[in-house]
Length: 579
Image (tube, rainbow, N blue to C red):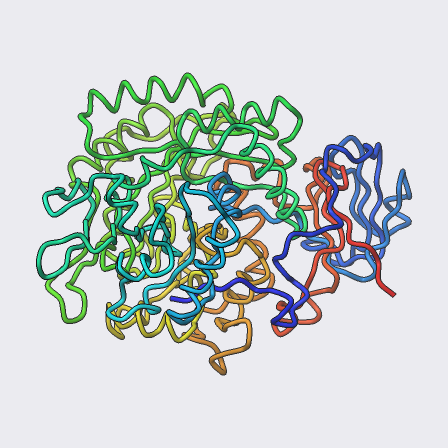
C-alpha cells in the first residue's frame, strides 16, 4: 500500500519538511510561568484559557478565572489540546534513516530507480547505500530483484528497506559481501526469496533481513545524537510531546539514557525492549534478568520510561507473512507466525509474572488471536495483580496489566470484545489504513473482501469498550498526527478519496480520534495520571493548533498546523505569526 510523505507540493500546511524556525528546545530560555488565552480548550467546555506554573497545568477556565501569570500567549482562536503522544514509533531508526534514499510515495518503478540513482550520485564513495520506503505494487509481481538495483548501483553495496520494514532489497554487491548464494539457508522466521533456478533474487523477508543488515556499519554515537536532536525538533513542530519506541536493544535504551543525562531528551520517551523467539525459557529468564537491570529503575520516569517488552507475532499482509485464520486468496499459505503457541504463551506469562507490560505486533486475524490468547493465558496462570508495576495500587474495575496489541489490521469478530474483557489496549496507526489504490489492490487483494471489510476497525473496537492508543509507526509512515487523524475520522486519502470514505462505518469523531492520540496513548503507557488531559496537576504538555478543529469539522483536518508546542511548561516550538 502507498504511504506517502505529504509535502508543500500537495498544497497542505501540515508539511513534513524539517522546520527551519525550530531552535533546539533546551537552548531556549526557561519560562517560569505561562498563560495561554483565546483558545478552545479540548476536554473543558466553556474554557478559553490555561495557566501553567512549575511545569504543570495550574488552572483551566476563563481568563478571569486563571489570571495572567508569566508570559501570555494568544492562541488566536485555535484548539488547545494535550500534546500528541505517539504510542508506536521507531524514533532512533527513523532519525537514522533520514539520511537515506527516501522512496516513500514513489508510485512507479522508474521513479524509484531514479531516486536511488540520485541518492547514489549525491553520496560518493564506496560505502553502503541505504534507502527506505519502496512499495510492493511498484514492481512486477510485487517484489523487486537485485538485477534492478544493479542497474543503478552496480559497484557498491546497496540495501533498500520496504516501507513496512518487513522486506529488504539488496544488490549483487551486498549479497557478495554477506556471502549469500544458492546454498544459503532460510533463517527461522525468515525467507530468502529465490528465482526458479534457486538463486537468491536479492529480496529478504522478515528475519532473513538480518543476513544483510549485520554487515552494514552502524552510525557513531555523535551521528545518532545529532540525528535524534533534529528528529525531536520535527516532532515538536507537529505538536508531539511524547513518543513510545517499539523496538530497542538494551544498548539503545542506554543510549537514550545518555541523551537524557545530557539534557537533550526534550520529550517524554518510553522504550520497549525486544522479546524474540528462538531461545529456551531458561534463556528468556536470564534475558529478563538483564533487562530488569537496565529498565526497571526507569519505570515511571518523567522523561525516560521503560518496563515494557515488544514482540512480533506475525509479519504483514502485503508480503503474505501476517498470520491468518484462513489461507490467503489464491494461496495455500496462512502466513508466517513467529512463535509456536506454547512458546508465546510461556514467554508472555513469564514476563507478566515479573511485572512487565507486553506489546505484541499482530496484523493478521490469527496473529491478533494468538496475542490475545497469550495475554489471557498469563492472566489465568498468574492471577490478578495486586497493583501495577509502579506501585500505585489497583483501582477497582480496572486492569493494571495493560498489555497491548499493535496494528490489528484485520480481526475476527469473535475477538473484538476480548480487548475490553482482558483490559488489553488496541494500539493502532491510522495512516496504515490509507485507502490508496495500491492498498486496495495489494492489501485487500491478498485477503479478499470479507476479511478486508474488517480493516482497521477502530470504531468497532472502541464501541466494544477497547481503549484505542494511536501512533504513527514512523519511519514506516510519516509521523504527522494530522494525516493519521484524517484517516481515523474521514477514512480518506489526503486528497479526499474515495468519496464518502473507505468502510465509513469505522470512522471516528474528531474528539474520539484526538483522545486516542492523547489520553488513549497515555493510558497505554501507564501515564494517564500525568498526561493526556488538560487539567490542574497534569504535566503542561500542550499543543496549540492553528484552528478550532472541533468547530471546523473533519474536512479541516488536512491543512491544520501547530502554532505552539509546550513541554513541561517550556515552549519547544513556536511558529512565527504570519500577516
